[in-house]
Amino acid sequence: MLKRQAVLIVAAVLTVAGSQVPAQELPRFSRPFQVPRGDTVTPAYEGWYRNQDGTISVSFGYYNRNSEEILEIPIGPDNRLEPESVAQAQPEVFQPGRHPGTFSVTIPEGYRGEVWWTLRIRGEQVSIPSNLGAEYRIDALGPTIMGNTPPRVRFSVSDEASAGPGGQVTGPLYGKVGAPVRFSVWLEDDGLGNARGGERDQRLTENAIANLGFSKFRGPGQVVFADPSLQWVEDDNRSTKSTTAIFDTPGRYRIRALASDVSGTSGAEQCCWTNSFIDVEIVGSADVSTPEVALSVAEKTTR
Picture 1 (cartoon, one colour):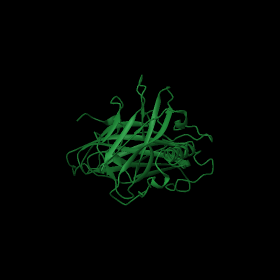
Picture 2 (cartoon, rainbow, N blue to C red):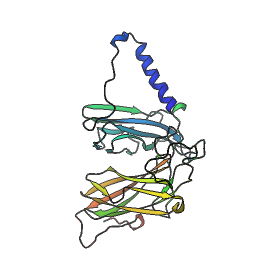
Picture 3 (cartoon, rainbow, N blue to C red):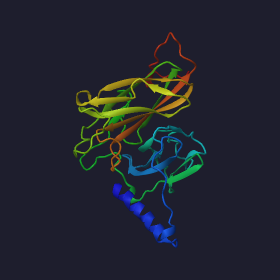
Picture 4 (cartoon, helix red, strand yellow):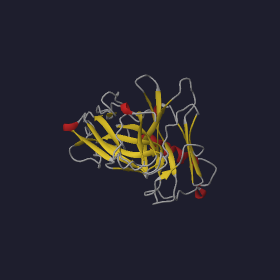
């Protein structure tokens, strides 16, 4: 993956150098890589992978050039996927820095074009297409050369576990403004994340084998997690852990639950992590007589 990116950068430089523009007139790149606030966000195409059912999914991420500012771009003209038949799986919330493999979409049956993701903010618009060339194939589902695979995640014992950037969407869960909503997650990992002896994910303690972090993916208000990061060690592999979140505004939310093993989410192989998403509907205001809302998917209602 890193070699492919380097080749593309060199090719772009050679294309400019080979044009009719004299060398002394070539534009200089002076934009800083990151500033605290006030800059933009750029979509990134990570690559494509084949699912177990034979379909093809394409993976996207992004780079928020702000080191402190979280950007929000609602789905619509400024944050869109094309063609229209593609499910709108992209985020509306963009955390600072580089975030690979934030979501993926499956190529619609019979579609032969590219999937485009467009972001526009602060007067800058960038569109990035998918590419099904062989050099863009990634090992999102594993196994890698060392046999590593993504953590497997589900939200109840009866759910089918999912893995990879496509993950699963569960819910909706229901809650009230100001009342904690509980998220319970079951996770299993193969423990092979550090088989190469590479750099360990700094978020993990020494004996942890996997991490799962929660963040707001979409929604109208603020979300505060009691514990935004859960860790699994070998002794509690395949067990269920939980946290709660408080929402300050009614509306529909999507929470991202990102599970990764000790190799983290920055590997050139684009493995091994799993995206999962929890849809939540928040209404009214908190009822002081009901301190916690802990509805599971099986207990959801249509109220």
